[in-house]
Image 1 (tube, rainbow, N blue to C red):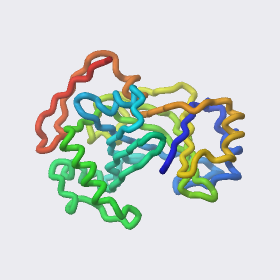
Image 2 (cartoon, rainbow, N blue to C red):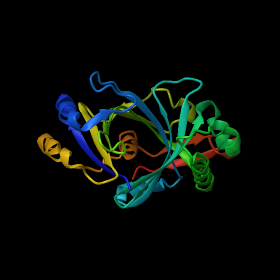
Image 3 (cartoon, helix red, strand yellow):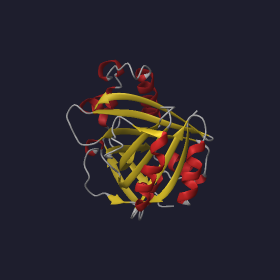
Length: 260
């Protein structure tokens, strides 16, 4: 099962990191290691009216879930977005993922018609089951969108194990109470960190030995850095109230956020 190791690192360490990891990684499909480029990750996270998953994270619950709809880069009418459930069990991470056209996402959420709106892809053989799993939770828990999280990612794969990744997640920003239609909009966002980024090392086989001296040289410690909770915490200031029509049958759903 996948494990994640997260660190908060100063932006001025990026050149050192690129050079240090170079012998051990290759660029993923989005990055040229010689001329590093970022791609933008955009996610809208969902929770129930009690903010159950948010409070589980704050309390340190070792078994929790994140429900989100994720897209990349800028808007295009033929963009693919992903229904995702990210499940944490103790130290291990599992993810259920299903692709769908962004232009069809509202109709899918309203009707639940997976056969009609799911996009079949050989690289996602479990997509239909994953979509059904997401929709089951969406309806049962009356999930609503609580925060939009955006960041610019520079990503690399382990050279000899392509399931492992190193990512630099930069310019973390977000907004509270988003509308799904605004997934690709950047209005009213706040930035989380000044001159810092989140370094993540993800592996199915524990922490890689080659990364030990690199982390030691950086002088950083592993942290529980949840972009989901960070972007909620930096935006909440008082008891808030909002409405959304992003529920089954577009019925009005009211949600009260308590600033604990």
